[in-house]
Image 1: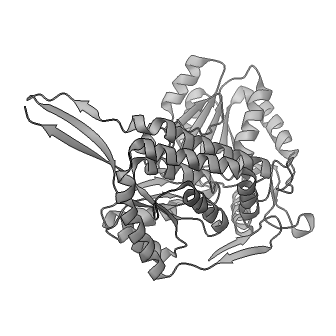
Image 2: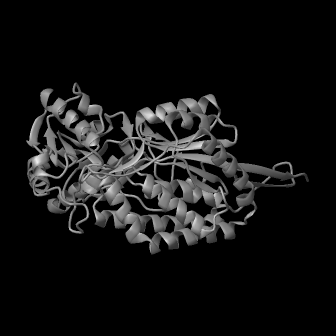
Image 3: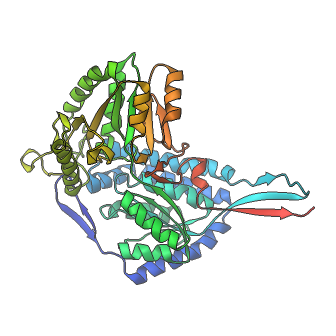
Length: 459
């Protein structure tokens, strides 16, 4: 189940055995015991641990980047950038975590004193995806270790090497034994871990289907969940003094990480007077991007994460065309004769996608964009919100008042103005509707799996 198949070559690189039930039980017991040790550390000591974790990520930057380029095809320049973001996340919580843990003093109407003290809950299970193997873990692990929670980390089956590399970093940084452990669990074992009374919560980043399953098991066992699921983020163009700059943002927002990001711009909604010019420039820019060797520092678009991912995206593209969508840029899965592996996928652009098509309400997880013409600002908002997802959105305009007005009307967890989304350690990340529940990063990343313990002293 856990194996590395290089999507750029199709070659099997390594295989790892799944955990036995006895190994799972030992990991849970160790994480439960480590909670007491981590809780005893004062915030400054936990901050020092995270600082050392950040330093080791920086020291091993090249090695870490090479691993995920091999595991899931991320172009090496983007892989190096992911490690840099991870370093910033651990440093952010090392620097700000102690302050986030400060007691909150409450005025007591009847007299006396009261404080709310923030403490960890215990062992947590993190179920992580393959598209950002280090970043997704950091935004879950960093705030929770700062709180004193311990981590059982279940990686994506195709990313076992990066998971073990992170586990080694925590071990080398001096984390208490059991405070951070990788478990190569099966789906059945995951259900057992969630149900175990020693495990206090679960965080999942993944598909809607996985989120439904995990939430159902967690709810049945009265466990807290954080779910970061899919997205079909709108990119709304209202006006443009510099259309070329907006097109460049659109290309970057759709094509980064081969379009395999939950919060990537996926639906491009453009007001009528700009539509033709925007689409012409956008299609031309995407047509100029050729998939290439992800180990080459100059490559912008590598393969998709697997042949299965490419097959799934191609099936969605074919279904859209069969349903009446207009192909503005053909793209699609490259045949084996044109690349080393059928995981390579050239950019594609669809127009005339209507609500009666399945693809209208689906997430396209790869380099395929949909463009929509809007007759008015109100119609642009309607199209943007006409989706089961609600992760991110972006608004592009030279008029600050107009941009803010539209941003206020968008149903999303995150809205960016004049940039195509993105993420930073201090900014809360999460969505609404089918995009999940809860928040990660920023101060809010330490407000999920926490016991807000009230300590009151009578007058």
